[in-house]
Amino acid sequence: MDTTTPLLALDDVTVAVDDITVCHNITLTVNHGENHVLIGANGSGKSSLLNAVMGTGPFRVTGGRIFLNGRDITELPVDERARAGLGLAVQHPPKLHGITVEKLAQAIRAGDRLPSAAENLDLSQFLDRDVHCGFSGGEMRRFEMLKLHLQRPAMCLLDEPESGVDLEHVSVVGRALADLLQTPCADGSARSALVVTHTGFILDHLDSPIAHLMSDGRLTDSGDARDMLARVRTDGWAA
Image (cartoon, rainbow, N blue to C red; front, top):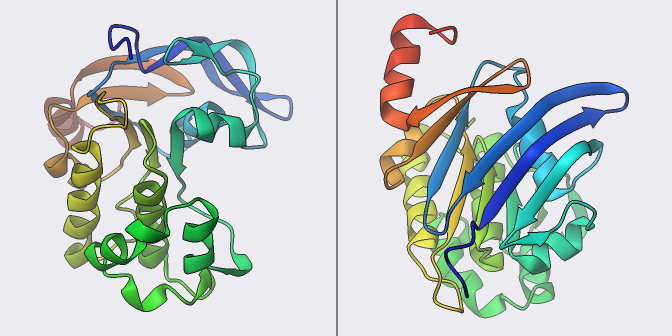
């Protein structure tokens, strides 16, 4: 694996939902082993951008290109992007009636990793439950992290992984993310993350995170994540 090639590269990407442009001319590079976070007010385009990178509807790339390990994935369907090494933990996942957590793990050939990963995320009691059926918001976030542990993508996308999670389990989710990112890929290369966060709690578990501020669908600033969030807490999103 050539780790000099960026793991994820967005080249002048514009995203639309129906006929409304929600992200404008986004250029962003995530190298192997880097952790990046997207911050910004509600409706600034953060979640839309993450979903467009993963290829989930109704978000469409109407301009620019998306590259994963140098491969143009802009036109690939979601399943091919996942096989290429991209994984997304969503904020509002669908309920999968008739598919238990155990069945899902077996379907992606990760049944051997399920017991320990579920225990680490305090989800062992959910293995015979249908995915996301009857889960609280915090339980859904923890399951989405479990899903990433089972999939083990090279490029991890997470949409507000600490949202709705009680304080006790925020650290559980954070430690699980740190553990995943510190585990090398099968080819020995380092994993990376692009995380949407409002609270910044997840930063306690990310090494040297780089933040990108979004406003009205545009990237307006980048820098050290902790410094930028400290400034936002003092001066607001317009800082």
